[in-house]
Image (cartoon, rainbow, N blue to C red):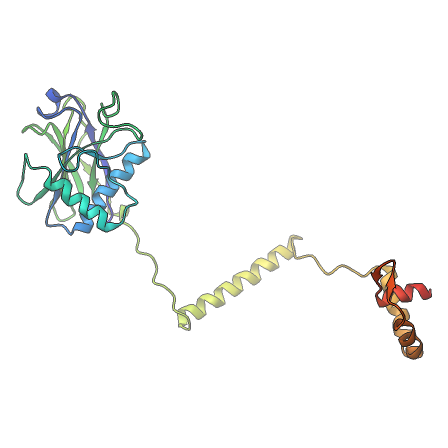
Length: 269
């Protein structure tokens, strides 16, 4: 399944986000989802943050300072996800994995002035699903990701209540990824048809290029001297074969270069 990052407000001071540590974000993922899907959710959020020059930096003990790397292998991502969820020991919600993090600018840390203030908060949404909004309950401004079946699969909170989004969002299903075509096996009917189509396309293209004067260059016409030499060779070679054979067997060098038959014939003219 693919995920679309949808903005859920902005980070803010403690008094505006439900009383928690200022400028941090709290993401909750439905634990019953396959771990590979939960990894995809974090990847979607991380890639969106990267596009605006930010990175996900975890903050709870045991993972403090660790950053989410979208290019890491799946095993490393799963390990960091599980460690970050386990480190969220101050608040556990049955059936959910909770993650605390900041999104400082690349090259900065969450402790640098201006690195995490008023940062955009993102939620992984599902094509064909929707995003609902709310505030309160010690969670500040928050959003929930609902799949097409009506199941809440992710929540993100501690947004600034003074900077809410316009409203709920419904995602059209055409955002979903299109499955790649099946590979064509050698010798199959499909591969034969494809090869035939490719050949025809090439023929049509070459015909078009020829018509507009972009055809491959023809073999250059021989020069007048070469034509003359060729003619003399054809007319003189047979009756003078013994003479030519004897002549060519002489020292075949002219100014240090090996002479060709044409060199000798030019000398006879």
